[in-house]
Image (cartoon, rainbow over all chains, first blue to last red; front, side, top):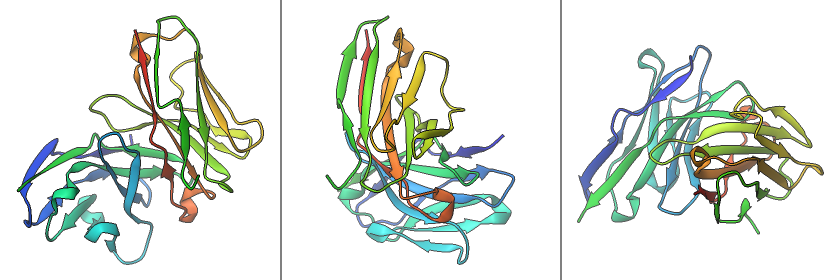
Length: 113
Length: 116
């Protein structure tokens, strides 16, 4: 069955430190992968997406993610975290070509001053 | 507005009552989706419309849930005989066309439903 696993429920990093959020997926075909961010009381905002081509994808707000087919992973990274990055982050895989996104349970990011 | 608009933002209803949640997608977007997000979970797919028709309703949990999009724009999610387990945030999203063609799915801020 298709699934997305985000192993870390909650991560705390210091402002200015680097960040990596883990995501593993299970899907038989070529995956379309996404990272969304959700701030309290806000909707989901797309950070970046991978469809094909270069496996290192650049997104908004200085985020990037790398698709590794051999590891079934799509980890999100940022070299220097800002306090405004505190939010919940969701990894998702698109099932088929329509609108069925399978989301992970999310990783909550806290940023220490 | 520029984004996906959902009303109401919050709804408290009594168990057994009927509820309607409305979604106004981004203008020109033919694809519309409904997701449900329970506390501490990621969003779960409910239904997808392409134009006026429901192209995939495999995520609707049971026949108490129904959604329509009669003119291919605004959509309404309808929940009959609400149960406490229906309490969640209901997210609407839209995209220009099929997301598999590279189109981004844009989400609204959600309708928080509480069944007491």
